[in-house]
Length: 95
Image (cartoon, rainbow, N blue to C red):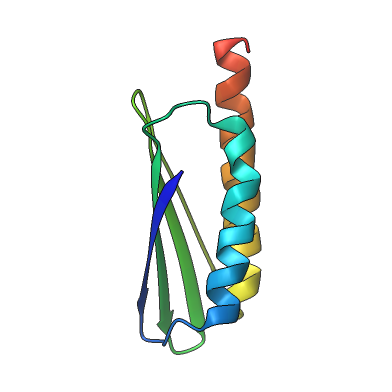
């Protein structure tokens, strides 16, 4: 899966980039489309640190967004939310 990371209000460090890459790879088991891509937006505004992930596939677009005081915490929360949505979608397809 191809993905792009954008950050606003913070410099994207290598540890955060590696953490996101590891977490995104965990979602690939739910995505069986070859033409799947993801857009990851990190936004820091004061004490609010927001992570938004948009997954584009051939048939559907899935969006999840979470805000918390810590960037790693918002990444974890948004990944859990995405995993739940993708698992539900895969069950609907019956695979």
